[in-house]
Length: 399
Image 1 (cartoon, one colour):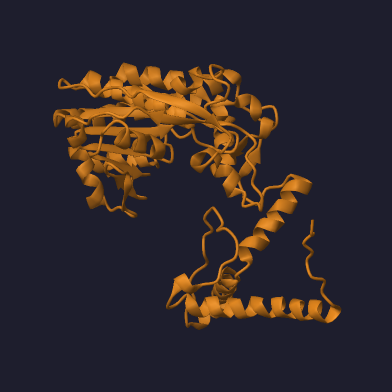
Image 2 (image 1 turned 120 degrees about the horizontal axis):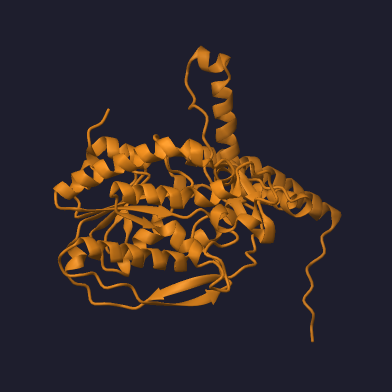
């Protein structure tokens, strides 16, 4: 059998190749700077794009002040750096070396827990700062404000549901609290959601506790309800939450009920999308998710009147897969989701992007939706500066 051999390079050929590569980088960078202004699709890029958002510096301005304070120098450096064709590869190689040799992450704010679990630092900070005494007054106020919002919508004949979604740290505290300092007491950490849910029910707010539902499934499956390389709940947790919402919608409406979802699932070692969002955020060269996740398949159904319902889902990053599930699998084709209220709108039977940035005028129609689902993660409430409170102020015309 003939073995294939790579041709050997002479010193002159190797030198010429090195010079060619060194020249290609500045030439490619110059081309990208030129192409960016008239044909971005012609830019030269090597390697997969990077995940995450970097705040760009102020744009270049023809003014002495911009030169004097360094704004223009930063703008030029940023533009040139972004234009380097092999930038993505270089960053991934650097992150891979730091990750493998030193266990360091290139993504700020991402922490590693036990058993390969990743988490964003903000979730851990909140979990370890829970204090039931400090929460008491703002939580009771928020419960009364949610009741005001609910009363407004119900006076118009609409359904209102307040949905609480789970935190990964609260689902897997053992992966993090023994690894990082955690000042809060075990009781304060574990009782935050039950105490607030009791306040909501006492105030008369229609609440679906997706956090408790998700945490109750821990240990019932050969996997947790959060993937090791992701920060959001998995597809099976979403399926259970979707049925809990459908049951609450049916309880409040006096017309034909929406049939609950039926599903099967298989275990997969190919994590994609939200099942590996934090792993992808590390921007390493060879991300290899060494864990399994459930992949849910929903039974097809014949859509009925529910397809015409105007459904508004307002929430944070936990609503995306849930909203798509309700729109596609539960036939709620009139569903529209509002990402942190103003960040973007998706909807329709195929759950497509409808608008990327919202205005107050775009938000007001939520008050006329047949069904309004307002989501907050257990790591956020009560939050007088969040999307939920902003919706409350907008619809009730509070200053």
